[in-house]
Length: 265
Image: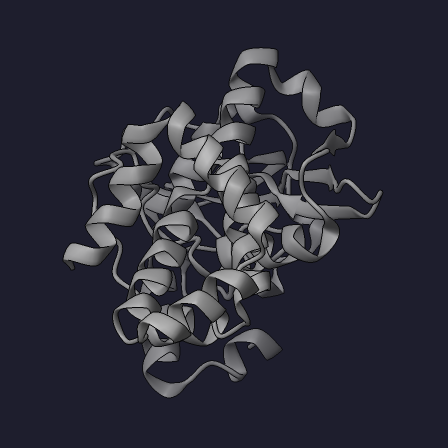
């Protein structure tokens, strides 16, 4: 039994061991790299409702360089979406155990700091998602410059996107976004930082973060007196607020709906 399996919580370990019965109870982590074969063409064509014969394994489809989700529709979709590469396989009985690497993309901030991020995570940014779709996957061969985003805020956005990697991507500006305890802690910053984070999230099209910050601002404002409100907006940085107001005029439905709906929730 591998160290990975030994360290699993009891209930998780039982589920894991139950899943590998179909491959003679072989712990996939004990399969040596030499046993894996190249050649994606031999892999069966599997639809989203036929995952039982298509086993995708690794530590995590999000946090590892390898792919690890057993009998997982999510992992299969990662494979089909091109989020992984260097795909290899071992056939055991009628099942395929697949080893792959996550596709890593480099983002470069305005101040020249580079971040290596998994493709599946950065696609939570509508701007980056559209860029890749428009220019093709060749754009991934070079660092993607983000001239409007400083490294401090890009790091925060990556942290947020990584934490919310399991959540559906917002496609409708009218969708409500629930704020979790983690989100509240994440947004526990002063007004100036909140303003700049809002600007960065908005420019990158990370709509769930943009919406959550709007909710945070709305919640703060509801509790303030007139004088406290003046201090808050002053700390919110007049230049940042002006810029955001310009965005709101350029895209009133998208931004204004977010901030207004936050007051109503």
